[in-house]
Length: 154
Image 1: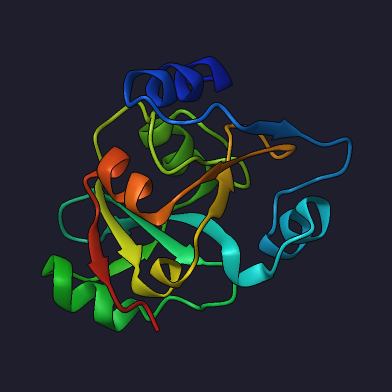
Image 2: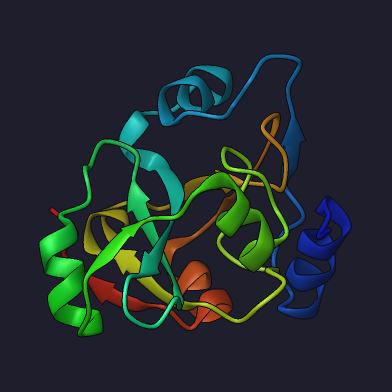
């Protein structure tokens, strides 16, 4: 199972700030995370894992906390039908539980897509490996760390 230490190691390797924060309350949802941090829901980079129905591949979308992901758009981009990953699938592919999935540091390298709406912010917040931890990152550093492709998710 991956851990918060994996996230710290990646942040260090990429020379990114180690601004990981742990809260007593849950940060599992975008709303909960924004309330704990004191930021806008739009500044939360939620990591949603999808499963390709034909190939079984995992696809990661890092979306703004306010946005609902248009699965049809994602299907056009990846070239196959998709469905949200089950808790078991997400854990198998990433090493993390839903609600704590960071945008990188996964068990497997995932094809990653980043919501263009996140680029509007100086900083965003992403899950730090548990449902009680988050970390701050710039959208540019998120793209560099994930190798993600910018897309419109709405």
